[in-house]
Image 1 (tube, one colour):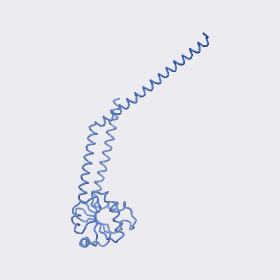
Image 2: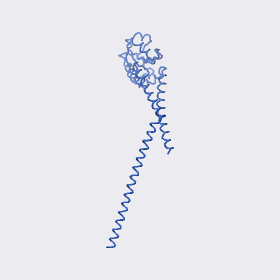
Image 3: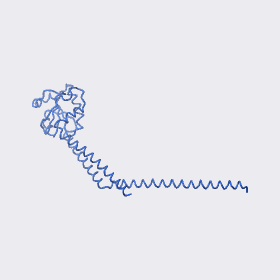
Image 4: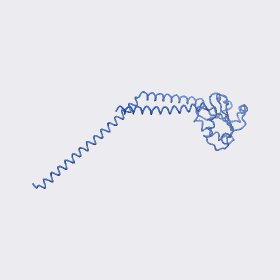
Length: 233
């Protein structure tokens, strides 16, 4: 046999063995990566299960559900009392409406007055944002008795009631810049400065604080669980 031919054959065999070994090593490496990924996924699932079983997190979640349920029940009760909708009432309904709620905003208006229509638009926007307060309106022409009793001289006139007692009022646009193009937010900021809204704003702030506490406590528990798992490793 030709020595060069033998040398070439041996060289090819050696190269083939090297390639085969490289292929086996590559396959082993791929299998190792797949196992590592599978293991990481399994660990992640276990960690999530551990978090779901955390008694402190479960209690926090249960308390939050109970709070939301209580809030929903309160909103439903307020709706039954006429809250959440900007409604027109008659003179005959007036006393029952203003004494039937803790906080009531009543707009005395005239159908032909342009500024009354502007006030209507803004009060309608505020109504769903402040469920604790009842928003109503009365046609001043059809309520002469209460117009006289409340000494209403200028329209629009918005009167703020607490427990059936008139405690403040907004006459015309004098507290809103005196212009027709004021923003709803301007009326809202002016209104919440009234004593009528003091309790309501406090309640809303407490609800916001409760939401912040819930999310912060939830994140804290999750962080604590993750850190504990890290330390155990």
